[in-house]
Length: 145
Image 1 (cartoon, rainbow, N blue to C red):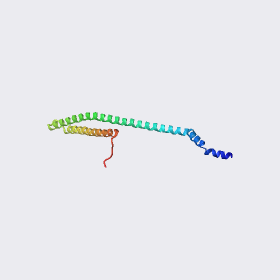
Image 2 (image 1 turned 45 degrees about the vertical axis):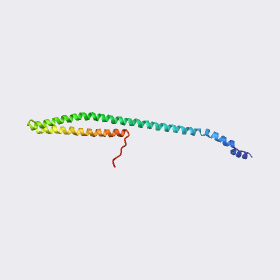
Image 3 (image 1 turned 120 degrees about the vertical axis):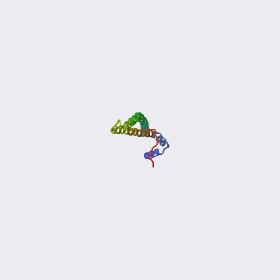
Image 4 (image 1 turned 120 degrees about the horizontal axis):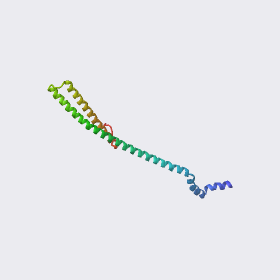
């Protein structure tokens, strides 16, 4: 008879209601842990997003500084090429007049070619800087097919 009363207790609507109300109390630790895990995951994603933004700004600043530095070098190099061209032209004129040796003409020509080579390298660096800036600003990039 006691076993039967005990069995009837589980069939009782009071038991179902009581179990439904107390289940969240016993699951509270699990629910709290799940909430803390979700909060921690959200915080981790937010920090990752902030780090990505800061890295993006750093890439843009780096590309802009590189472009600015190359531009200043290009201005100086343009002046150097112009001066080397003037020296070469003068050496050729003096050689044609017999006042200069061929070795001097060749030296001024070598200096001019070296300055022009450096000028071309700075142009390449400027183009590479532009590509780096474009990529840092989020521009799409794909190899030609």
